[in-house]
Image (cartoon, rainbow, N blue to C red; front, side):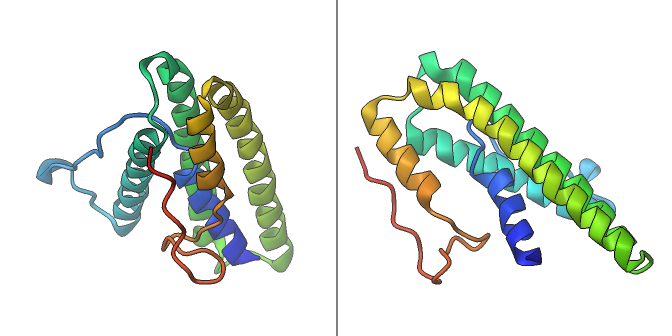
Length: 164
Protein backbone atom coordinates (compact mmCIF):
# COMPACT_ATOMS: atom_id res chain seq x y z
CA UNK A 1 0.00 0.00 0.00
CA UNK A 2 2.89 2.35 0.75
CA UNK A 3 4.19 1.82 -2.79
CA UNK A 4 0.74 2.66 -4.13
CA UNK A 5 0.86 6.07 -2.51
CA UNK A 6 4.37 6.69 -3.75
CA UNK A 7 3.19 5.84 -7.27
CA UNK A 8 0.10 8.01 -6.80
CA UNK A 9 2.20 10.88 -5.52
CA UNK A 10 4.44 10.50 -8.57
CA UNK A 11 1.36 10.40 -10.77
CA UNK A 12 0.12 13.61 -9.22
CA UNK A 13 3.46 15.14 -9.68
CA UNK A 14 3.91 13.91 -13.20
CA UNK A 15 0.82 12.82 -15.06
CA UNK A 16 -1.36 15.84 -14.67
CA UNK A 17 1.04 18.60 -15.34
CA UNK A 18 0.33 20.50 -18.52
CA UNK A 19 2.05 23.78 -19.15
CA UNK A 20 4.84 24.85 -21.34
CA UNK A 21 7.48 25.48 -18.77
CA UNK A 22 11.19 25.36 -18.65
CA UNK A 23 12.87 23.30 -15.98
CA UNK A 24 14.12 25.68 -13.32
CA UNK A 25 17.87 25.60 -12.90
CA UNK A 26 19.25 26.31 -9.44
CA UNK A 27 22.15 28.71 -9.41
CA UNK A 28 25.10 28.01 -7.16
CA UNK A 29 23.91 30.73 -4.77
CA UNK A 30 20.44 29.19 -4.64
CA UNK A 31 21.60 25.61 -4.37
CA UNK A 32 19.71 23.53 -1.84
CA UNK A 33 21.41 23.60 1.52
CA UNK A 34 19.91 20.44 2.99
CA UNK A 35 19.12 16.98 1.62
CA UNK A 36 15.40 17.66 2.10
CA UNK A 37 15.63 20.88 0.11
CA UNK A 38 17.63 19.12 -2.59
CA UNK A 39 15.02 16.37 -2.77
CA UNK A 40 12.22 18.95 -2.98
CA UNK A 41 14.03 20.80 -5.76
CA UNK A 42 14.48 17.54 -7.65
CA UNK A 43 10.76 16.71 -7.32
CA UNK A 44 9.82 20.20 -8.49
CA UNK A 45 12.08 19.88 -11.51
CA UNK A 46 10.55 16.48 -12.28
CA UNK A 47 7.05 18.01 -12.19
CA UNK A 48 8.12 20.77 -14.55
CA UNK A 49 9.75 18.26 -16.90
CA UNK A 50 6.53 16.24 -16.98
CA UNK A 51 4.46 19.35 -17.59
CA UNK A 52 6.64 20.30 -20.56
CA UNK A 53 6.62 16.74 -21.88
CA UNK A 54 2.85 16.42 -21.76
CA UNK A 55 2.39 19.86 -23.28
CA UNK A 56 4.51 18.74 -26.20
CA UNK A 57 2.93 15.28 -26.53
CA UNK A 58 -0.58 16.68 -26.48
CA UNK A 59 0.32 19.52 -28.86
CA UNK A 60 -1.50 22.10 -26.79
CA UNK A 61 -2.70 24.94 -28.99
CA UNK A 62 -2.67 28.64 -28.18
CA UNK A 63 -6.45 28.51 -27.70
CA UNK A 64 -6.03 25.70 -25.12
CA UNK A 65 -3.36 27.51 -23.07
CA UNK A 66 -5.75 28.96 -20.44
CA UNK A 67 -7.19 25.50 -19.66
CA UNK A 68 -3.70 24.02 -19.78
CA UNK A 69 -2.35 26.60 -17.34
CA UNK A 70 -5.16 25.88 -14.88
CA UNK A 71 -4.47 22.15 -15.11
CA UNK A 72 -0.70 22.57 -14.72
CA UNK A 73 -1.19 24.84 -11.72
CA UNK A 74 -3.34 22.21 -10.02
CA UNK A 75 -0.68 19.60 -10.72
CA UNK A 76 1.99 21.78 -9.17
CA UNK A 77 -0.16 22.49 -6.14
CA UNK A 78 -1.00 18.80 -5.73
CA UNK A 79 2.65 17.82 -5.96
CA UNK A 80 3.58 20.39 -3.32
CA UNK A 81 0.78 19.19 -1.06
CA UNK A 82 1.83 15.53 -1.34
CA UNK A 83 5.46 16.44 -0.85
CA UNK A 84 4.62 18.30 2.34
CA UNK A 85 2.52 15.42 3.67
CA UNK A 86 5.14 12.79 2.88
CA UNK A 87 7.85 14.94 4.44
CA UNK A 88 5.77 15.23 7.62
CA UNK A 89 5.24 11.48 7.59
CA UNK A 90 8.96 10.81 7.21
CA UNK A 91 9.84 13.20 10.02
CA UNK A 92 7.31 11.63 12.38
CA UNK A 93 7.90 7.99 11.45
CA UNK A 94 10.39 7.21 14.22
CA UNK A 95 8.42 8.71 17.09
CA UNK A 96 4.73 8.32 16.33
CA UNK A 97 2.45 5.64 17.70
CA UNK A 98 0.77 3.06 15.51
CA UNK A 99 -2.50 4.97 15.85
CA UNK A 100 -0.87 8.25 14.83
CA UNK A 101 0.77 6.46 11.90
CA UNK A 102 -2.59 5.18 10.70
CA UNK A 103 -4.21 8.59 11.13
CA UNK A 104 -1.44 10.23 9.15
CA UNK A 105 -1.78 7.62 6.40
CA UNK A 106 -5.53 8.29 6.28
CA UNK A 107 -4.79 12.02 6.00
CA UNK A 108 -2.52 11.35 3.01
CA UNK A 109 -5.13 9.12 1.37
CA UNK A 110 -7.83 11.77 1.84
CA UNK A 111 -5.56 14.52 0.56
CA UNK A 112 -4.79 12.41 -2.50
CA UNK A 113 -8.49 11.88 -3.18
CA UNK A 114 -9.17 15.61 -2.77
CA UNK A 115 -6.23 16.50 -5.00
CA UNK A 116 -7.36 14.07 -7.70
CA UNK A 117 -10.84 15.60 -7.66
CA UNK A 118 -9.28 19.04 -8.23
CA UNK A 119 -7.12 17.59 -11.00
CA UNK A 120 -10.13 16.04 -12.74
CA UNK A 121 -12.06 19.31 -12.43
CA UNK A 122 -9.16 21.17 -14.05
CA UNK A 123 -8.58 18.52 -16.73
CA UNK A 124 -12.19 18.21 -17.92
CA UNK A 125 -12.42 21.56 -19.75
CA UNK A 126 -8.99 21.00 -21.26
CA UNK A 127 -9.88 17.49 -22.43
CA UNK A 128 -13.19 18.75 -23.83
CA UNK A 129 -11.25 21.29 -25.92
CA UNK A 130 -9.03 18.59 -27.47
CA UNK A 131 -9.23 17.53 -31.08
CA UNK A 132 -9.93 13.83 -31.69
CA UNK A 133 -6.19 13.29 -32.25
CA UNK A 134 -5.30 15.00 -28.96
CA UNK A 135 -7.91 12.93 -27.14
CA UNK A 136 -6.33 9.75 -28.54
CA UNK A 137 -2.91 10.77 -27.25
CA UNK A 138 -4.35 11.79 -23.86
CA UNK A 139 -6.31 8.54 -23.56
CA UNK A 140 -3.20 6.49 -24.31
CA UNK A 141 -0.96 8.56 -22.06
CA UNK A 142 -3.24 8.50 -19.03
CA UNK A 143 -4.22 4.87 -19.46
CA UNK A 144 -0.64 3.84 -18.76
CA UNK A 145 -0.07 3.18 -15.07
CA UNK A 146 3.62 3.62 -14.61
CA UNK A 147 5.93 3.91 -11.67
CA UNK A 148 8.58 6.58 -11.27
CA UNK A 149 10.96 4.57 -13.45
CA UNK A 150 8.64 4.72 -16.45
CA UNK A 151 7.68 1.03 -16.42
CA UNK A 152 4.18 -0.32 -16.19
CA UNK A 153 3.11 -2.79 -13.50
CA UNK A 154 4.50 -5.70 -15.50
CA UNK A 155 7.90 -4.05 -15.74
CA UNK A 156 7.63 -3.21 -19.42
CA UNK A 157 8.33 0.22 -20.83
CA UNK A 158 5.05 1.89 -21.85
CA UNK A 159 4.30 2.30 -25.53
CA UNK A 160 5.02 5.67 -27.03
CA UNK A 161 1.92 7.73 -27.82
CA UNK A 162 0.99 7.69 -31.49
CA UNK A 163 2.86 10.21 -33.60
CA UNK A 164 0.72 12.60 -35.59
